[in-house]
Length: 319
Image (tube, rainbow, N blue to C red; front, side, top):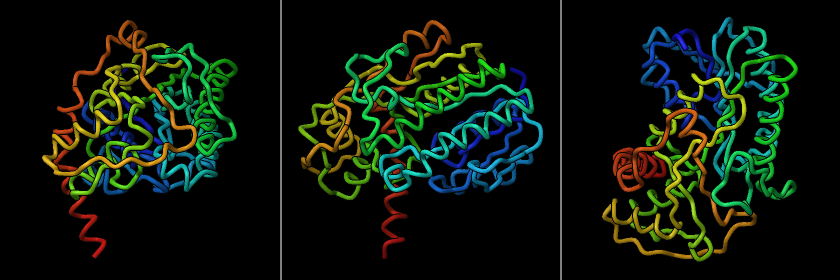
């Protein structure tokens, strides 16, 4: 994959902005299209003087043209529980209309295409850990369905363009990811815990905390994206950390890393919240030679300065 011009939809988001950094580091020219519904322009401020970078504020649910590109990375979508609960209809639209329009750019330019899907395609899984061959256990009319079904449809459209139009596509199923630029108030586990611990508040654990997750540090995740982008695999590939732990264990780890005196507080488990979530990454290991390197405690420590600054800025803005 010789560095050329890449389009990143949703590039002002948490993962999209880190992907932009990685592409530029490899010598690519990058254009981001983002309507900033949930992304933040500040995630890209450090690139504003880079002549190889362009930003276009546009909603990809409308047809768009950015000129010739060699690779399309389709990362546009609300992704946190807070965001897709508030923006349910836009989430469905960007997963459907936005995906069609991003694929149309790839088709027109004869560009390669990689789409960010999600482990939410597996729903509340009956198979554990989750392999790419598992079809999932998703409530198609539940409160999480606006995100889950949007991503499942995204995968279907992507495979249709590959089969019918011969677009050179790839699908990455992303598991829980964390690190700098994760929005403080987005409702994700690490954001919530870090915010509460740094404020000295009790950490809110839903249910009894026995439900499991596996969190991948952002640099490991992006490395997986780039390896998949350079491969010739068209079917979904899990990119996530298989080191599983309970939500309660995660809370205790955050308290340890932050040095907080916070306690644990329990709240009712939200509807359709998955009891288990852990990737089988056998395919990624064999196909891409990829596996994560950074464990949870190390990743939390690497994220600490960012969250400290974010908590301070949030407190200042609230005054």
